[in-house]
Image (cartoon, rainbow, N blue to C red; front, side):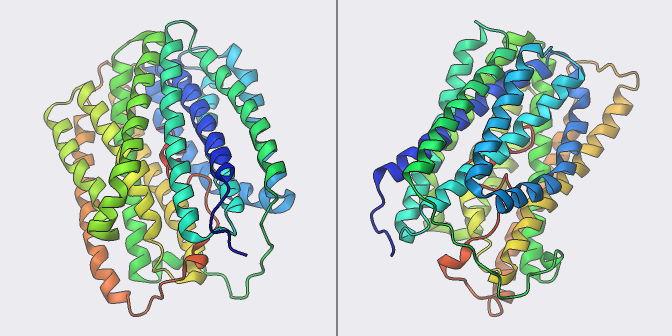
Length: 445
């Protein structure tokens, strides 16, 4: 039986869980960034962090999916939240700023584990709305997405208020405490809403891992994902380089990153509520996917002309805000023309593997450059990253051209590809491929 009018608590409780988790993430991430980028040591190790996260993306995602299948989604969800809270609470009191192994591990652990937390919560929402009419479920997910971004903005405000009062490491500890509160809320949701999940057996042969290379449309999606991921990494690094070069100290860094996350989430929230539906109605999927690269063409040009900390921060807010709202919600729909038997594999390869490979390539290039710039391990600050600005501009241009080509591919392959009914659009996702929370949980951004 299809539920036409979902209970208000079906929306409110998952939205609250997502909002609190996002607030905890932003608070912990603010403390993490403030400690890691105190001095140039963290910046020198940043490319290795990118590479390590990219290397771990595939096995981490596959292990997460296997755990959900083996133990059940609900027990696995409680377990992963308790693991996150325990590790963060245990490590936070002994963290020290600068270049040290424990801080490096925590710098990678926070985005990696929160990617899993966000994924498990969105899977919970999908379970709750399994039997809800599609249009009602879509409206509910939109409201939950807005709740997520609101939580991020609130987290930024809390981090900013505490930045001048406590050491940055205690922000990570506070994030752990908030995660424990979410565990209680999740347990209540589990008890309030029985699972609607039904085991399903595949009747058709699963697509091969190289499926995205087998037709032009999937290959176009793969190229869009790779160029977009590379641009995101380059913008991230320029932003962090500007922050590290400012020498603001631990509390100054905490205040700076808190301000940034407030602005990022506020802009994303406004775009999610007011711009995304109108953009999609007027220009469609292909036009919607061109919004982000077109905006970045102007932003990257501005950065190359005025390479200041402010210009890089504006570019990062533009990229993060548009990607987590307009781009992400429309990007999900670009997979509709893919054959239903191939869609899950294409999604995994395009968003989970190809994007990480592109980020690893960019990180290796930055690492080689840093070794030439600072062979003795000491960087001259502020760091001159003008060449990264030009590479970013060129990569955005390629991204835009590939997206433009998407219209041609749809015309060429449209007769061969069946548009699947909405019920067939479900697919297994990588932990960082959830609308609205993708940008909050990715890599180190």
